[in-house]
Length: 152
Ligand SMILES: NC(=O)c1ccc[n+]([C@@H]2O[C@H](COP(=O)([O-])OP(=O)(O)OC[C@H]3O[C@@H](n4cnc5c(N)ncnc54)[C@H](OP(=O)(O)O)[C@@H]3O)[C@@H](O)[C@H]2O)c1
Image: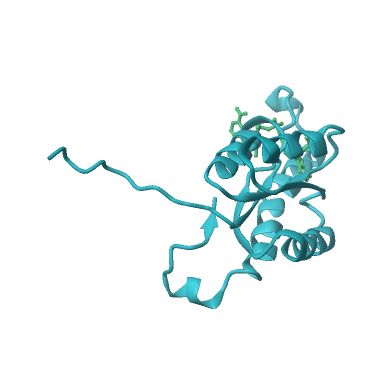
């Protein structure tokens, strides 16, 4: 008998996973990975014109529900409203991939305090905002070590 395969498989069938920045770059790969594992995927983006089209295509390719939501992750009020909308339309939310991020590319000595705050607001505060908004939808039993919720 062959040895059992190592690792494990997770099925996201009928679960709603939120991917911030899921319309392009690394986030797009996360969107595709979640969809290929059967998840319905809610993509959060900031301003890309083609985000809705890109997200819809992934849904068609993998036969799952996908929808793009325009939202600045650094805006707490907007994030809370958007997660509520996602949960109503696609939920229950079963996972968050907090991927959205930016960088200011210039020589280190030219970086300003404003540059720092711009990056911090998205890459740190944005992750905090989205994780906190998503946590409202984590069922109580998950806090008792159930593996049925995803946070990346
Ligand atoms: N690429 C690398 O080498 C690298 C290395 C280390 C870490 N990372 C991190 O990995 C993550 C993804 O990187 P990437 O290279 O794939 O980035 P990317 O191609 O520049 O894509 C960034 C994504 O984040 C979204 N986004 C940016 N600001 C946002 C905001 N305020 N609210 C909501 N969405 C926002 C963008 O939406 P729009 O399309 O609407 O603008 C886009 O979907 C980032 O957090 C980055 O810091 C990347």
